[in-house]
Length: 260
Image 1 (cartoon, rainbow, N blue to C red):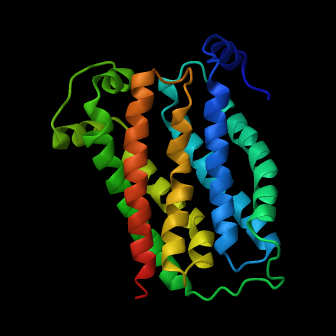
Image 2 (cartoon, rainbow, N blue to C red):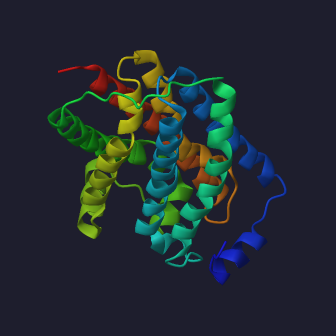
């Protein structure tokens, strides 16, 4: 892949002999997710393939890297193009996994296109609500989980000082556009998952499990040791992301199961 020279150099110096095992774990997660959704979906194989490729590329690829771009100053070895190349690299396992996992999941799929019946007004207001919910969950878990690790505070702020929650929120509000950015991310997270919601709108349990499997792909990647994060910072983010995205999955499921 056409990564920058600084990225390649840092990657070669920070290589881990067990990285292949961690990558295997992530791809097993992808495979299980695709298999589960394919097994329980009533959509055609063609629609499933397109839907899963779009959802995973958007949520696992795009959504994680736009945050890397936003906090780019913390990652000195990354050029402006490297996060986009990472998104491009994520396409390869999806191309390999999705059609094969779907082939194993079921012997045959419906031929007809799915019938999607949902009001645009419902989509808009529920997406808006979930966008705000995501922003709140992000800041609550960001402070009360991740920010409790001293190494993470030093990594991002250069200081081990831990301000009280309200004071901390005021300080980051004054320093950046992070509130608006995370609101937009929340809206995008909620919009990009809509195909899964529409697929399982009549299947409550399947919808909940699918939401959790897809959303947690954004945190499972933190299992891999990498040169961007010190191990303590990486595990702090892993705990934060696993817990916050599980909660957001459940809230998303609850909002969409409420038919009003």
